[in-house]
Image 1 (tube, rainbow, N blue to C red):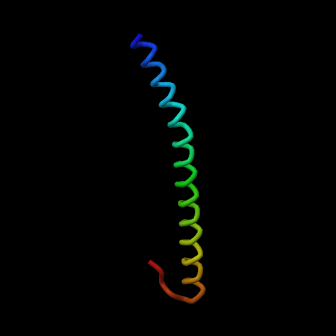
Image 2 (spheres, rainbow, N blue to C red; image 1 turned 90 degrees about the vertical axis):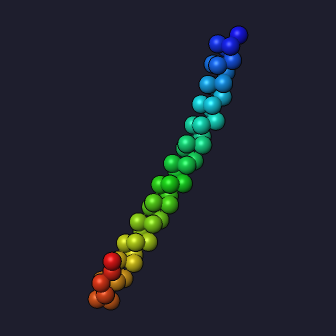
Image 3 (cartoon, rainbow, N blue to C red; image 1 turned 60 degrees about the horizontal axis):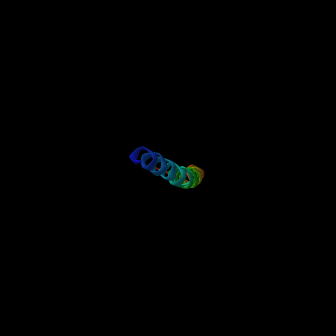
Amino acid sequence: MSNITNWVTAIILIVICIPVAYLVARAVSTAYFKAKTEFLNQYRKGHENGEKTE
């Protein structure tokens, strides 16, 4: 019986984890893309104004 319970538990965990991992990955990539875009915009603005950005 415990073997079946282990399989059921594993399947439930996998079914829960895959969408969660997908959502986390999407959120992280979206945040990274936004941050990168924002950084590049700031960097360009600084160079257009002749300022040094660090």
